[in-house]
Length: 309
Image (cartoon, rainbow, N blue to C red; front, side, top):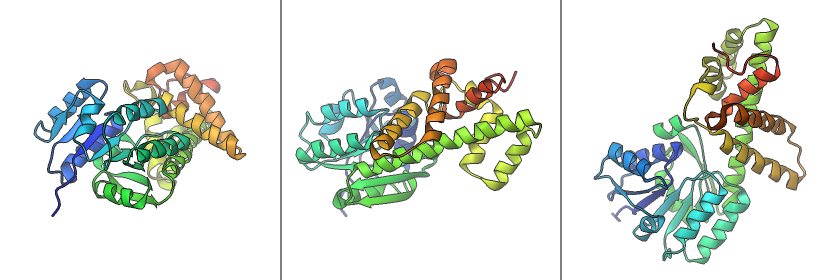
């Protein structure tokens, strides 16, 4: 049996930490997972939690790339991804596979595919759907696009390791993966807008939020019920570290609106949600989260932003 490839991971946000955990626990690695994060403390903390013998913390992206066969990235925005790739391409990447799990504009992904493959490496766009708790549990949905031979090298680490399911766009432009991700995230944004409006209407009309929540649990179990519970518990403004930072949510909304404008499509609901996210940012700053839309809708309807005294 051929030895397992050497893996490196760049970017240890909420999602990346959970994905690394499952690579180590279920990825059948025979070499330590190389870890790099701009704030090194995150790499050190994760290595301490996962085991120093199972991880190797490095100081630079270049150090991560030199000995890796497959390099995963999961970063916050297009600028961070492009900067990381600038560093990656300073090394000899011929024969290596670069995998981007970030949520970026599909044009960014397609440009990365051209840059990286021109240097003799392979590239796979691999954004994921799911919250940090799903990343930790290994139950993400992984979307893979790029050359089929490259996707094949990455799939041993997706379904059954980092994720519960794959959406396979083999031999399609890598940007199709991030196009799906950006459009898919509009569903999440709009879901939180609908839930927020529904709960405010239930409260102000006299039905009551708990009565509406009981219906949501029966009718829409899963993400709808989970976000509803977070809203009613006040989690949307009490959490110190948001699960889906307001700035990242607005970045995704901007990408989706730009794609829609270019395609000649109308997305009025998304524009409403984005306007509420702008109010969230003003009220909560860096504590703002996607379900914090609830507070903005409450305030707009004459209620306090916070639902608990």
